[in-house]
Amino acid sequence: MIWMNGQFYEDPHRISVFDKINLGMTVFTTMLAHKKPEGNVMLHNGRAHYARLTRHAASIGLSLPFTENILLNASGQLVKKLNGTYFAIRIQVSAGEGARGLLMPDKATMFMTATPVDNPDDVKPVRVKIEREIILLAADPMNRIKSNYALRSVARRKAAAEGFDDVLMMNDMNAITSSSVGNVILKLEGIYKTPPLKDGVIDGVRRATLLRAMDIRESSISSADFMFCDAAWIVNSLGVWPIKSIDGVEKPIEKLIQSILKLC
Image (tube, rainbow, N blue to C red; front, side, top):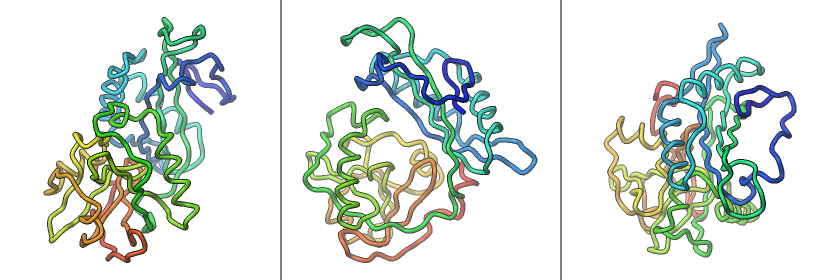
């Protein structure tokens, strides 16, 4: 079951091969949904996700064809049609279907999927590798929005082949920016830190909620900082993963927050 351009469809294969999504003219967001036993659906930080999707779309010349209320209502309806308790809802907008070339079509394409996920409070610690060959440019605006994850995907597959769960990406200033699919936070000499957006970091919704809830400093972070940190975490809208080793060096496993489900 998917939602696309205002309609629900059983067939997920609805996007045309001529849609500009194939040229990277697209942005997306992924938010957590929790379906309660009585059937009510809680969308975690739904308004913040819509606001960020609007910002990211505008950065590549797109505008959202549906309002916040329509999208969030459709998200809840989609989850109600599926079996499960916790879901990753992916909302994506592309420039739409059009002729060959880079010109923007007149009508955008907007679609939504919902995939069951595990309880976000039951995540397992992960082993990560610092990627030193595949570099993200700090000044590249595409590295600051949720759009093209090709380089992150290559880096993660490379790390997986070496027995790691995820990878820590670096920019051209030799600073750590993120994992493949989330922001990062570390504790160094008792101080919590996360890389600043200027380093080429995506403005994660979970990152923003943690900055409001905790005393976390935005500061450029070197690979040495990570190697000598007291503890570290990967964070995104679907969970907070403790990092149990970095490049094979074991790290203490600590809880960053008691429950992601209570942090909205």
